[in-house]
Image (cartoon, rainbow, N blue to C red):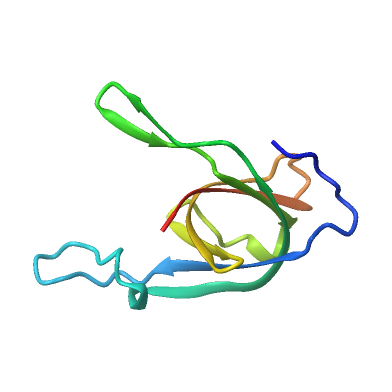
Length: 116
């Protein structure tokens, strides 16, 4: 993972989307339809670190691995969860996890998976 420079490094702006519950004719969620995703959080300033990642096969299940990690203020992204998508620099990715590393509710870490 890249080295973190905390001060002055929040040069990226992230937007988070949540699925609105739209289903197709067969009753399945329409995750591939961009119109089915609503903006939840916009204008979240963060730092973006690239990681090496991919997918690993464990047993009969494919598990996602982190491609990018975002760090930013806690208060703005309290409502973000792992069932959402995030757009940073025009790239949309699935949110893998949302963590408050220190437990102080000051800084939030958001891990992103593969690009959509």
